[in-house]
Structure formats: C-alpha cells, structure tokens
Length: 407
Length: 224
Image (cartoon, rainbow over all chains, first blue to last red; front, side, top):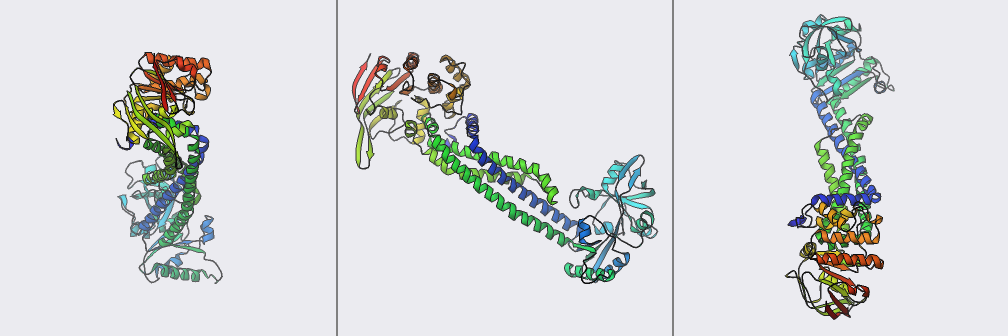
C-alpha cells in the first residue's frame, strides 16, 4: 500500500514516462537545457571553491603562516614569466638583519639540465639552497640525509633529489651514495625527498634536485652576486615586516619614489587572500547565474507542463478509467517533471566534468570534483522538478475522467 | 454482477435541479450481452458512467461485484475499475506516443493483478483480432477499425469481468462497425459480460438483451 499502491509495475511505468518525454521532446528540451545549465554552474562553483580552499590550506600548511617570499624581478616581469636578476646576496644579508626575522632560506634556480644515471635520462630543475631548506619547508626525506654545513662551505657536489627524479632515474633502486650527472657535473646523491605531489605548485613539486647554494653558484652557473629568491619567516606582524623588507630592497636598489618595485614580495596571506577573492567572485557570479537558470527553467517547465496537461486531458481520462487513482496521476506527472530535471542535472554534471579542465586552465584554479558535487547537483535538480511539477501535477490529478473523455 | 436500486442522478445548474436519471432499477448477471439504447440526452451515458464507477449517483444503491459502491473513496474506485472493468470508447482514445502493443498494456501499469507475461498476452490478443502485422504501429498509422480493435484488446488485457463500450461503432462506417459488434459477440460467447451503450437502432439486432432508456427511465427491457 502507500504511495505506490497504484503503480505496481515500476519498469513499465518508467518506460512509459520516457516515451512521453520523447513524444513531447520539443518542449522538454527547453526545461532540460535550463536545468543542465543551472546544474553546470552549481557544479563549477562547488568544485572550484573546494579546490581553491584546498589549495589555500595547503599553501598555508606548507609555507607556514609567517612566511614571506621575495623574488628578483617586478610584478610585470613575473606575469611575463621572466625572472629578473635583481636580488643580490647583499640584499639577502640585509633582509636577514630585519627585526623579527628568525629563519631565511636563500635559493638559486638554475636552468633545467639533463640528469643522467646509467642509461636513464631526466630533465629536472636544480635549486641551490641553504642547508635549512628542508627543515624550513618541513619537507622530510624518505632516504638519506640533507647536505650539511661542511658540504655547504666547501661547495661539494652533493644533492638531494625529489621523488619524481628518484622514480625516473633509479626506479626503486637504492640511490644513496650513487653518482649522477647533472649536465656535465658529476654529483653524489645524499638524500631522497618524500613525495609531496598534487597540491601546492602542481605535480612538478617533486621534480627537483636540491644542491648547496654554494655548489650551484660556483660550479653550475658561476654567479656569485645574485639570488633567485629568499624565503623569510618572521615572528613580528607579517604585513609590517613586508613593509620593512620593501624599504630595505628599494634603498639597496636605489629606486626613486616614482619607480615600481623591481622585486616581488608575497606572504602566504597574500596567496590565500588572492584565492579567496577569486573564489568569492566566482561564487557571486556563477551562483547568481545558476539560481537564475534554475528558476527560469523551473518556470518554463511548469508552464509547458500546464499546456501539456490541457492537451493530455484524454490521456489522463483514459488512465483514470483504467485504474489510475488521483494520487496515481499526481505521482506520474511529478515523476515526469522530476525525471526531466534529473536528466538535466546529470547532463549538467557531465558537462561540468567535460568543461572542468578548460575552466581550470583558463582561470588557473584547481577544481576538486567529489561525490558531494554529485549529491548537491542531483538534490537541486530533484527539488526543482518537484516544485515546478507540483501545481501542474495537482491540476492533472483533479481532472475528472468523465469530463476528460466527453472531451 | 450489477444491481442498481432506484438510482437517481441530477445535475445542478445554479439553483435549478436538472434530473438525468429518475430512478433506475436494473440487474445484470454474469455472461450477459446487453445493448443499452437511447437517444442523445436520454441519460444512457450517465447510467454507463455510474455503472462503470466513473460517476456517482445522487441517490439509490449500487452493488457491483457484491460490493456496495456508495461511499467508496477514489483509491478504492480506481482499484475496482482496474480489476473488473474494461472500457471501450467511441473515439478509441489510444495514446499517440505509444504503439499498438504498448497501448494495450496501459491497464497493466496500474494493475494489482499479477498477470503473467503481459506482453505475450497482448500479442496474442492483437493477433486474435487480426492485428499481428500492426503490433508496433503508432495509432496514427492505423485505420479506425484497427484502432478500435486495439482499444478492445486494451480493455481485455487485465482480464476484466465486464466490458463497457460507449458508442463503440459511432466513429466507424457500418461495415467496420458490424465487424466490431461481431467481435463483441465472439467475446461474449467466450464468457465475457458485455454492455454496449448506443443510440444507433441498427445495433438492436445484436446482443442477448436490449434495454431502452427514455428520459431517465427504463422504457423497455427485452431478453431474447
């Protein structure tokens, strides 16, 4: 008994509804498309916000809330993907003397030489760094040890390799103590980093070889004046420290009042702020778009349904004569409308999966597609169908069979 | 099977009462083939609607299949119609989005009877009515006579006790109409109870019993 009393053959019932939808496809398509678009934008909102939040959290966790990054080259050069060499060793020394700075990692990025081990080759980037790199990035090793003070002072040819490099060159073999060729420079592997993957900076994060800064500047690039970047950590207020950093650098570089910075400063708060602003704008824009799309498609659905019911009076009459109760009719019309919106919802989900990649590339925002998205999307489409279909279905159920049959 | 006691039915137009049925007493037994004849406005269709559980009388008692119908709710009435009655209408009323066999299967969707292999059964019925070549045709691809035969197959699929046909030949030429009546004759010989409602005097020769309705009352009741 209960709600489904009158529909004892569910499969036939559903088949019939699908045939009805196909017969009235000219009308159905509008509601279907509207719901699909609405659900598409809801999916994009949820995946984007999830992705952005995850990224923000990872940045915060890996960098620490108190870190400030300084690179050579101004904002414009950065956006053009040019790394200007403007940050000097002397700058770094001065920055480290700023009040509150308790940790500093100096880095030098070289070009991408080809690494060789036995007959295996892999192109990776070399990062020269101070010895506190690993501790400061809270990046543990899966094997071996980091290079030490002695290695650093004597510019020894030693390196710690990222897990991607390890996989490519050693493929599971023991790497510690082995000699690899970085370009033409032979060097000894002393440690292998744990995989960090996916999150901050994409999959390339594990594709790196870290060497003592001194080794890189004297034996790889022969540049004793400049650095690529410095990562500072402060126990004072982050934004105040950022101002001090900016003042020191501008003075050192002799920049006049009117000139733009020829360096770039980022705190992890900046990054989070950036991510939050972007996802906030997306939420506003797409949120409104999806609500509008769903409401409009709901109205369209309801109105087309109303029309259809006038046309289907005889259909309803005959069903009532053959044993459909009022509730049976109400139910079958509700089903019809919910199936339209659910199909629209599924199309929206599939579309968002298909378009997700494009969107990601376009806005440089990671998207996190989870079961939560599917549940939300289906729930929204279900509710839209229920609300839009209810009044027409009620009207249909109130049609008396004799009136309908009499025509 | 059917017992009507002093059935009255009136419509109200504003304050004015418009009596349609003025006290009908009637009994129809299993296996009968009844022609219910009357001119337009005589009340024959209203009587059929009450007998078919599609309408309710204003007064009187109706017992159908040993159940007193007075005061049953919509759910129960729908279930009774589904279990016991197969309808055939003048305008066929096949659903345009379903093909012949799917139209025949409509009552099955709402049926609580466990009809075994309904599709096979529908096929057998259609074949029996000479429509084996038309099983997958849409109503728009069928002639009037063919559509009515599909409708009769639909009326039979759920194994009802009673076939109620309202002007089943009204939209057909006389030859095709005669074929449809022969079909009812055959079904009656197989044991089905059949009531045909019509205004057409030519149909008086069919059936085992002729009931004439005039002005809301039974004026003639002849059993052959």
